[in-house]
Length: 618
Image (tube, rainbow, N blue to C red):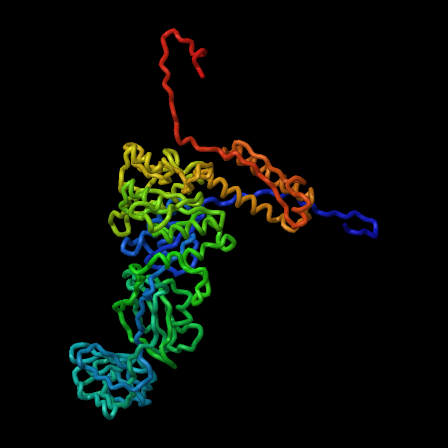
């Protein structure tokens, strides 16, 4: 307590308004393959367009994960996506060819389309006096003259010099170029047609050679980079500036103008302008350059060698490492394992049904304690086979144990969708569709409502399912301790999720998805709020603050049909002297979660005509 010395009015704030905040309930973490995008890096995606821009369109030859992400993003808005690639993945690349100040032994006029720049050493151009329109004032040629092989046994060139005149190489007299002595014969044209044999000059030159000067590399690994191309052109021969155009799938996507020939410029050189700015390429200087002139190309040149090596990605790549010594970070699923680093409610690896991946998904969710996993079975399994798979029996006996956890749910069968990007139908794993159903459930009702049934369980983008189970097969999937949630097709209602069991085999409230998701929401919301009581005095005032924060929140959940009833206890009975001496504060919250009506029985009671209904009602 403050000690006051002089008289006055002293005001203090006492904040007793602690409350439980509202939290998002459908934040998805997903690990898998894609055609492009950052590798082993968490990327936050909020819509389908953004996913396609960052990770590329879906491609069934690469993997199913992009389909799942796009299905979820039809209704969901928060996705953390981690891309993995194979061990031999490469970025597409290609070298920029330019002309540098080096002597070369290059021949023009041999039809190979080569290009040279000749830097003339003569300072003035003598001209024939008395010729109509021709000045007798000596002209300085200060810039290099570009001479290109025309591919037809001759060559072309041209560059403007002082006075608007043009220096042009003679296209028919190849013998006028003496490579051994460095002599070249040129026509100096002022705009008037020169008389035959007049206005000709001879000077010496230093040939400049074409060479690879920069490497352009796609920003991420994958086949997508092979669709990147570029053009290079001189925009100002006097000031030595040029333009780089980047194309993707034939369309111009980026333009870099007024680039300078000095790689050390630091402002308008290629590396400074492109790196960290381009969404498509990075540039790296090759060797030591002082200056260069671009070798112009008007036809786009494509990068090559891009490969995601998707065919060699294994379960270990999806699972990743707790710590990669090379990358100095976790990889794969382990990038999403820390609740303090990434806020999640749902976790999946679409299409990956290997037991090692499934068990890792479950282990991460149980360790985090704030999210659940959506599990995909292998494709093309019949009902008895998917039951054997999730029980570790039959073909899978001795391969893996039964999957058993309230922190995971399994859905079957696979769903066919139309892939508009590639104009084809594709069979996709159920997880992406289920995530969309979860998101819609949360948006239209609450996270503790069952994400299934005619009101919330529609698979909106599915056009077919891989198997139509009979009623007996449905009993096998959902009963006798089995926990496979079927996706059914109804004649007039379409494709609908028709189950909401978790993988917990023990019969309790937590063997249902709606209760598990209710508990996840309550745990996260309450722990978020009461962490502000950590390090407060462990006395009855703090205990009351806990009750004041939690009770209104649980009342609200009850009003929103999440609880039948509850009781909060945080007092001297939960905080005994022994507990207090260990610097602990304990509370108990008793909950009666609302159950879903999965089995509706209707009794049609037939009575006689004279029966009094009040007498037979029960």
